[in-house]
Image (tube, rainbow, N blue to C red; front, side, top):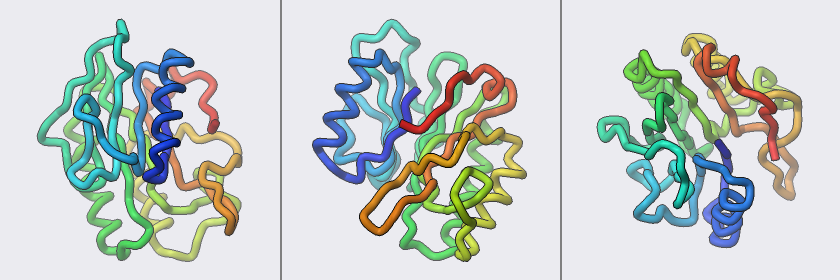
Length: 190
């Protein structure tokens, strides 16, 4: 499984698709896609998508249609439930808290499947490796959601997942149910 943010860039999305082919990646969660092709599963607003590599022998990707909202999309891949997420940093705290509440409900409905939540929360927290927790209260809300979700954080180290001219941060996160988290090997930002 590959997780990426293409920042609405066509070339970045083309590179992602080529990387999936070259590295034999079965599934990718893409925050801020350039566009969402018909064969991908996307949220209501085109903010996040889940893509399966074409011509793969892996289990088919099927959409849980009740789990498509603004900012997240849930899909079943084999015995796993994947939830791709994206939250804009330009929205107010109450919207973020409502988003996290909805996300908690989605994760709860996925049981008894093993669940992974992957994407860009745009909340900088030391909990997932950022050098400091931002003063925006959303970071604390994200931490509280993570603690109460029953999911394990997979992020390791302090390699920035978002790098811009103004500096970098870790806002892209990966969570998994404990049984699934125990099966994950070599999680790393690339």
